[in-house]
Length: 95
Image (cartoon, rainbow, N blue to C red):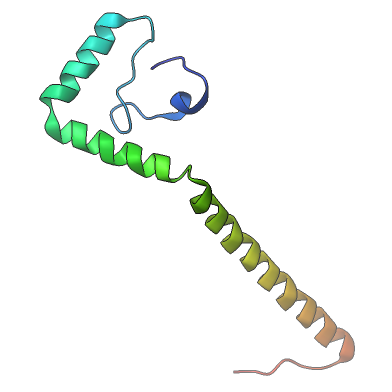
């Protein structure tokens, strides 16, 4: 629905939803009829909407954050190691 704050405000028309004004009953009817009559569109919207909702699941977001923080920590440790090596005069091993 158009003009809707929150989650609905970021849905893509024709990709994850069919957007229409909340107060426009005729537009809602047309959108519903379109979905009922156009199976490929209905299936694409359903698939895209499901993919979108899966991004909002806590476990998915926790896994992304964990990977992000783990990467940052590894980079930080590597940076600290190279700083310590320069201070001590130890040259890193070359592969």
